[in-house]
Image (tube, rainbow, N blue to C red; front, side, top):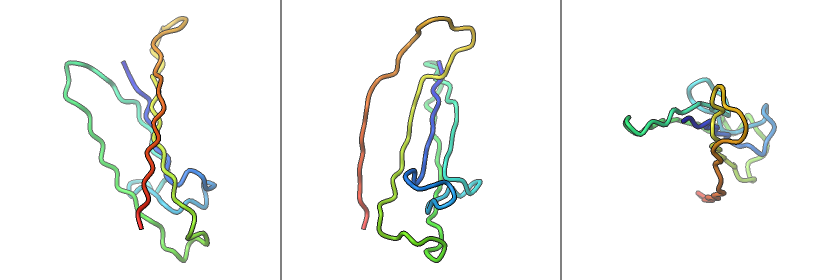
Length: 96
């Protein structure tokens, strides 16, 4: 069983004007397929992000919205409907 995980930093901005980037690769998004196996250790991914220099962007007041989406990965050779991942979670924090 696998999960497609996607992280989007500052997702309400256009790609070229995003204010937050990941340290590795200097991109505003991260995508991985995570293999879930009940006989293995839990997975952990640490990602470091940074705020671009304030001289590089004009919008300093709007919030930086970050999202993480998880979806079941398509299994090879699967036909018809399989497992369904369902649920909505909203976590909102404001750091001043």
